[in-house]
Amino acid sequence: IKEITDNVKVKRVRYLSDSIRKSISYEMEFNDSALKVTVSLDLDSTMLNYDVECDFHEVGSKTKSVPQLSFYLPFKYGCKYYKYDVPIGTIERGEINGDVPANSFAYADRREKDKSSVMLITDSKSGFRCFDNSMSISLIRGTHGPDPYPEFGPHKFSFAINLVRNCSNKDLIKYGYNYNHPLNVISGTTHSGKYPLTKSFMRIQKGSVALSALKMAEEKTNDNRFILRVYETEGKSTDVAVGFFKEPKAAYFVDINEIPLKNLNGIVIEGNKILFDVSPFSLANICVEFE
Image 1: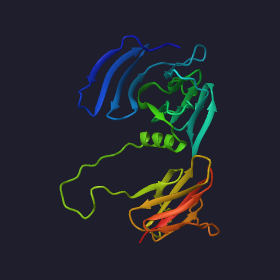
Image 2: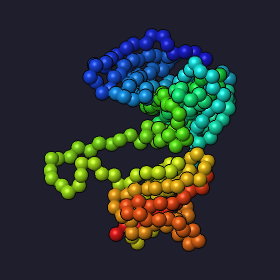
Image 3: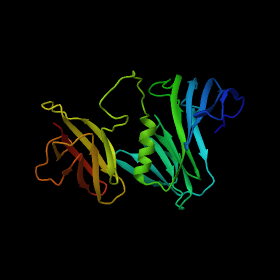
Image 4: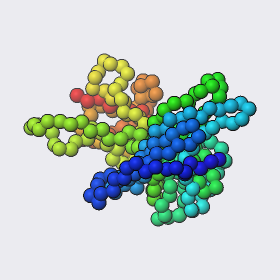
């Protein structure tokens, strides 16, 4: 293992007192490869973001080694358990000196009330190694077979260090989701209109559930039908309230193939909201119809 800390060249620093985003950009070379990194911190954010460009020219060999670029993050507090996001939930693992899979994040659970814990979030990497009070991500791995040069050339990726406190599984999933689905902005013209300055299409107002999908129904006989898919995150039964932009015409449970479950009801429409229950660690698929 070799630390890449030599010959670092700082290229740009943005640190004005009134800046919404402060950042530092630097470049470095290692072996036959080169890195360009921008580290940024937004106003009132707990998340330190890394945007990385790497021109990777390391070649693996069956007789020598497999070169790998990793990001390593040690921390001071003791940690024996780590949480990761997996499809439809989270998983807790002990210390493992080896890569384990996750969708987007690893969380070092401090288990002390009112103390911050470290969370490592990625936009495209899924190999985490968490042990000995540290976390690392496998960023690029130059294997040699079956393709002799699988990672040769330019790469772009991002990851972030986040400090969180007293987080539920739902909160952790939300951090990972928001990082990988940033807010998109579209410029418009100055004009009058009938809608308010802010308006939401849908909002989960109550319940320990996370959003898995919101999509048009596969059957196109009615363009005003949407499929809502949520899952329970904390291992307990929960009452869920979901608000919409207007009052739904109908709402009913469906299976994963969007076929109505005739023997399962219990969805209540209350104004612009639908109310329903979800069992521990369960998935709920709901078809919502509008006029």
